Image 1 (cartoon, rainbow, N blue to C red):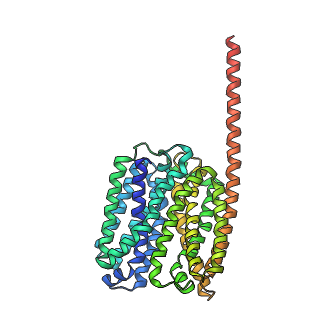
Image 2: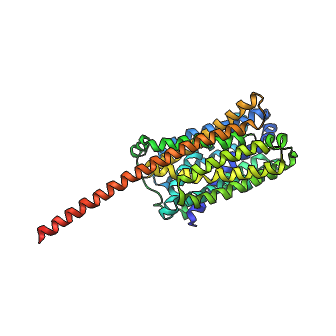
Image 3: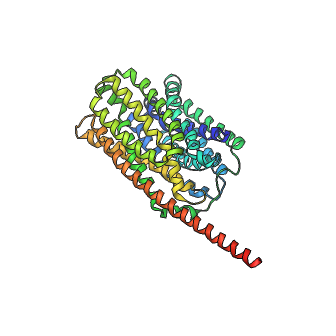
Length: 408
């Protein structure tokens, strides 16, 4: 593995930890700042808003610079946000610091994906992206549980300060290991031109709809496991760790399979996701079955992530492609909001904890349909490009033959 990918994975680990660890520190933060747990819960929404705003904005500002320069600048924003969060004297300051931290999130993954695929041969592009993204899944396996434990035993401020240190390590790794020429310089006009392409919008749409299936269920995983499957509350954390292992395996597997099967893997993955959620809804009251299906669900869902991320960059067909790559990260966060909102809607109607699974299955099927259309559109565009290349080669051959006859 190129060491540049390791630097990107470290950054992804830090970003994933800071995004999700707040969920495990809600009581400690609330008690320290003298606010309600529900008020601290709004930090999660504030972070998501920051991601959606920062992904296109900071990426657009960074297109004139090299990917390494942009990534280092983004990590400086990330370090500043986490450091400010660690020393925030008031709730309002903490909210502002969390939004500042989130601004770097989507842009880092967007620009990082473009840089990652340039570190390897073209036929391993998806695998390179998966190696970066595995840092995000490992955050759920190790970073979040460890951070929660430190917050409970010592201080939540120490956790956020430690994440700032991870950001500094990422900067050091990027400067030492990521080649200055990784990725492609671009300009804002060509980056924006990518959004004229129908296939780009199809991929962004399937991200928002298809991955909303994941968040429709995962947002309510704790009550699903306790109230529906009947697991003791103490078992929730180990089960979520297993889920994290499943997502890590899925991300690595998706990277390898995605380079071979492309968007066919996304179509199949979303169809399998729909089937898994239907079965989950039918057997969720059986603890062992519920745990097994949850882990499989995470494995399949995260296997599609690197494929979609690489797919949207290829769909752009412009030098760079960092802006559409970052837009796809914003789409992931919109999927989070859509899935959680739809799950809340059916639960508020008193339909029970299996209802989000049925809704998720429907979302997965809709995403599969969009993925199928995107795959066909991509194949048609590839055929047109191939035809143009063949025509160009024939024209060149004719010109060479004519030149040879004239010379004779």
